[in-house]
Image (tube, rainbow, N blue to C red; front, side, top):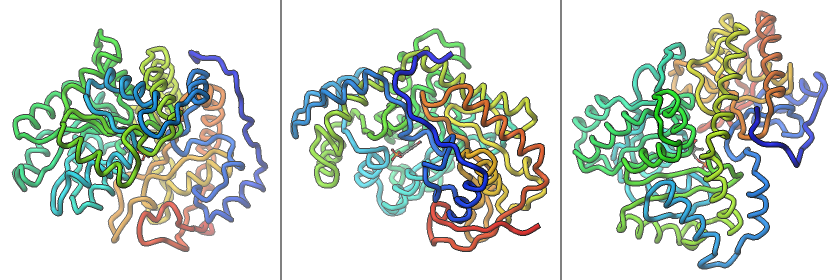
Length: 447
Ligand SMILES: *Cc1c(COP(=O)(O)O)cnc(C)c1O
């Protein structure tokens, strides 16, 4: 059961099928164009969509808004030092600013930055600085049916290959994303992090986590490896293997906005801080209000509560299991923050050129007012190259929806699956030159 009770509620919108069909048409069959007031269950993302606790809301009311030396900065700093063990803490307004600062300082033209799989903002920030983002995840990560416990692990042989190709001088850092968001929220094992750490130390290359879901990752390690330590201890063991981390507090910080960099290196911190002052803010607020720092500090402690994590991970697993037992094709194993429908198998009669995952995303909205997001050809096809996978991600916001909300989603999926033959593909009518999925317009292909 939920390890919390609810003392503030927000009504959710209900709509008619006619309203939803009209809204879809107006949005060009792109759910990014739908107004939230017409969405009943919003599973677009788990980022910045968490419900805050009473304690976090209380912290907002007592925020210290001093420009320099805010009391809440020191609480924020101390909490992050305790959780990560890193000496220096730099607040940012969200995760991508932490990436922007780090790569601006570290990455030069032609550098390679390995990661298990780069999240899209991470890749974009590497490339913006002239670097090449290289994915080095194990091969199984690309097989939606490979039921592997730590499907986010790095393949050390792929790291060796990057090294053999360009050498130490062209690898300014190695990143490891925990959990591996773009690979389905799959965990990385402590053992794998140890290997990556040893590799980086051997080659004298800095090792930095993209730690957005560090607590979910540590919880998976506790359960799947049968570790006896607390999740907080397991997190510490991860952090002590690396030189620092970037973080979007919109995930495991349990807040609606915020992020940070934490690291040990003194000279690097000085460079990052100088850049921070130029583009983000003074080092004791870094683009956030004092009250936001207070809410993040509180959220980072709440996210390590094992009853919370048991419910959180358990809720997503049970959601996936319910879909699977209804015969609906999903990616396995189920990751930490989302369930992914496999649209290639769900809509096997729709060819990839007709965007099956986008067609399924639209059908979920038309049928039940549910918003997921396409991760397939619309997002990734470029220059005639189509991605391997056609997925619909159903991300679960933290502490927001109950079991009955997700049961409803399962019901809608089941209904659609029973009538899948009637669903049709889509064709593009407009696309932007980059990141087209956000603004693309489409139309249904007539039967
Ligand atoms: C969300 C996310 C980011 C970027 O953080 P923002 O707060 O959205 O800027 C980076 N990496 C991963 C793995 C993420 O999930």
